[in-house]
Length: 85
Image (cartoon, rainbow, N blue to C red; front, side, top):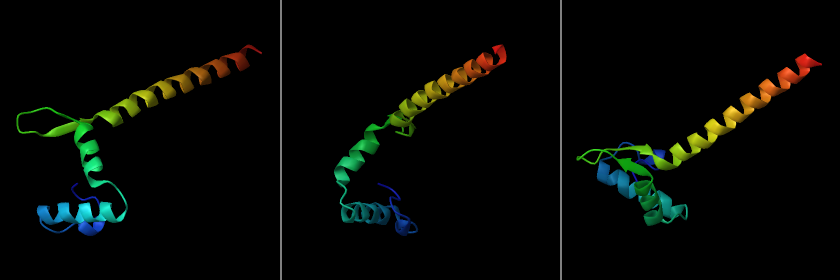
């Protein structure tokens, strides 16, 4: 976990990993579970292993889109019914 905590910023990458793991451990988090979750939540696209597109955030965005669409439809429906009265 890179830069899990602001106090870890400023060191070498290896130090940042150890610092972040230490902060998670002190907070009572399961370090391996957090790392696995982060690893599994991204889609890898190229041969160099660059990661992009968080799958969980993408699912949340789809849900948000549906909620916004529903709110817009409700708003239009409410405006139309008041105009007809």
